Amino acid sequence: MRVQQGMQILNSREKMMRSFDNTSLEAEAVCRLVCRLTGRTVGIEYLWDTGDTSTLWFYRAGTDIERHPLTTKRSNND
Image 1 (tube, one colour):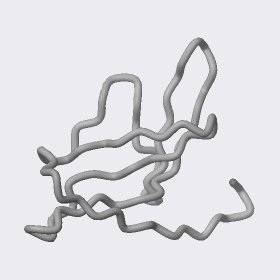
Image 2 (cartoon, helix red, strand yellow):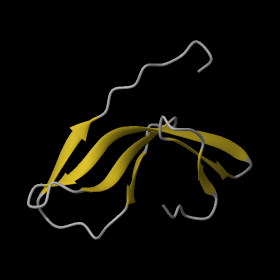
Image 3 (tube, one colour):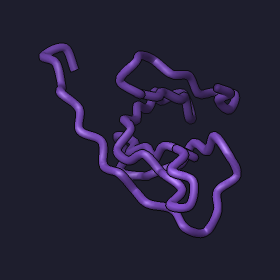
Image 4 (cartoon, one colour):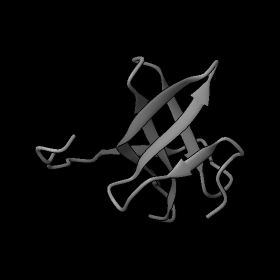
């Protein structure tokens, strides 16, 4: 999987981190984006600790996308 420069996957729970203006930001995957026609996962939607959302696309997205909410179990270390 290719991730834009300045971003990296931190662990298998699909967390991402980026640096912006010398401030470290963290995001957690909140939705899996699935093509209704093929059933293929085409992207992941992330919620940043600032409240912003962004999408990491794996494949070219069509117009018929379903959002599948992800549930995560937070550890005491988060």
